[in-house]
Amino acid sequence: MLIVLPDSAEFVAAFFGTVKIGAVAVPVNPFTRAGDYAYYLSDCAPRVAVVHAVALAEFLPALQTAPPERLVVVGAQWPVRYGGPAVTWEEWLGQASESLEAHRTLATDPAFFLYTSGSGGTPKAAIHQHKDMLVTTESYARGVLGLQADDITFSVSKLFFAYGLGNGMYFPFAVGAQTVYLAARPQPELVLELVVRYRPTVFFSVPTFYAALLRAIQAGARADFSSVRMAVSAGEALPAELFEQFQRQFGLEILDGIGSTEMLHMFIANRPGAARPGTCGIPVPNYEARIVDEAGRDVRPGEIGSLWVRGASAFAGYWNKPELTARNRVGDWVVTGDKFFRDADGYYHYCGRTDDMMKVSGMWVAPAEVENALLGHPDVAEAAVVGKNDHGLTHPVAFVVLRAGVAPSRELPQQLQAFVRARLASYKVPQQIHFVTELPKTATGKIQRYRLREQA
Image (cartoon, rainbow, N blue to C red):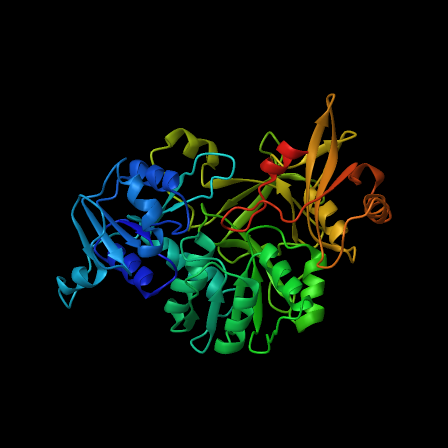
């Protein structure tokens, strides 16, 4: 079943109902375009699609590609211009029995597909099994966060993402906690208002949105995080400067961690009361991590290498992509595509995606390190660094979003370069700085560096 719904009770019912009868749930973005829906329909060929009214304008044209056997529409009344079998959500429920017997599935049977963001490439569906939600709940929600029945979770990341699916659905449901849903696209002022109104105890977001919240507060938005006992971040590495700004504002440490669609949720994370700014923490219980060189050999502490991880929530494979599955699985190990190093205390430091790393003057440069240095400047709100190839040589180029009220000047690029040079080795200093009004991001909030490389 293809689920094209915003965060809502209908999403939860459609997802768990599908899984309960032994079918496969496929949640996707309800705010995307017709071309994406056409791809999903042709790739996984769902028999049923449950679609919210907000997505109909883009979804209906996609039905010409591979129409499902039935279309179920939430939040809209007929007539809906569609030639195939279709019902409203209310009609569909009215035809159903009051009881639903569970299908006798195995723990290793497929339960749901999650499409990756596909930034720079074709989306791929990671196949997850029935056991996987239980594994991540016990390992991270209970084992790291200590989530309890009296908690209230609020996730800025949506349910159709792997990160948001745990934060806002099966984590709180597993422990009997409550959760807050925001059906609309998240906006900083609205999220701050909901935090005040519903007083969540565990708040989940991504680095770029934490930065947006702080900018909104600086501009005068009301904020009260007194109910929040834990703030969590994932999606991209959390800059140390952002960690410190949030802690100064609210007295809360942000628990940064790393997970992936392929592993379903976090596999490395900081612990409450022991968070280290600029790191992703240490492996989550029941997960193992390795940092290896190009030959697959473990590197020494402090050396940058490729991160491999294993745990019982690992995806079973990519739907209809056996060759890609083989490239991303080495035995039980999942090849993440991320560059990391591990310090002497065992904390893992994110250096960037393999494709994002730069080799400047024969030495590796991690974009996150340069970005964090730029974020320490009082005029900088956001920063992204990419490599530019010039006559066979690579050098860093920065794209910078300035704080509200700050205008770019002729002198500011040189000032920012001097600021970075005082903190990092000279070869890491951006040779060019471009001022932009916003950074291109995926729907999950990750910076689309490939688009910036095209502009560098």
